[in-house]
Length: 229
Image (cartoon, rainbow, N blue to C red; front, top):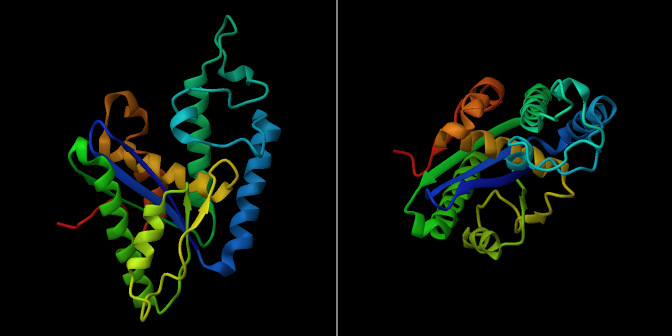
C-alpha cells in the first residue's frame, strides 16, 4: 500500500513526490499508531483528530491548528507564536512517522522550467510509477497506489503500464487529504523532502527534517532525482 502526495513550486519548476508505504498486513498497526498519536495531539494540544494536517500551512504558522492555543507557545503579552507551535507539531508528526513499525518512506524530485511545471509533474509521476513497479517486480509483490486529488493524469499514466506483467494493480485510488490520515502523513514526507531540496532561506528550519526524522525509514536514505543521473 503506497500513499503519495506532491509538493513543489511552479515559480521554481521544482516538483517533489513523497510517499509512505507498508504491507497490507501492517495497515491496522500503522493506522492504530497514527490515530493514537492524533488522540495525543488532541489531549495535549487540543488539535482535533479530524483536523487536516496540511504541512505547508501549519509549519509556516498559518491557520488555526489548535482549538485552545497552548500557553507554552505564547509570548509574555499572550501573543501566540503560531510558527513556533507549527514547527514543533510538524517535528512531533515526523518523529511519530519514523517510529511506526513496518512503515517505509521515500521521495523523488525533478526540476524543470517554470513554464513547463505541469509537464514536469506528469513526467516525474510517470518515472515514479515505473520505479515503484520495478521494485515490486523485484520483490515479487503487488502494490496499490493512493493519491490526493482528482487529476486524471495519474489514471492515464497507470493505464500506460502493460497489463501483462505489471505489479501496480488497478488505477490509483483518489482520496481527499482532508479525510485521509495516511495522505496527510505522505504530505509531511513530501513537504520535508521539498524543503531539503529547495533550501529556501525562509524554510531553513526544515532543511534537515528529512535527514533527521525520515532517512532511517527511507531505503535510499534521501530523496532521489528522477531520471537518475
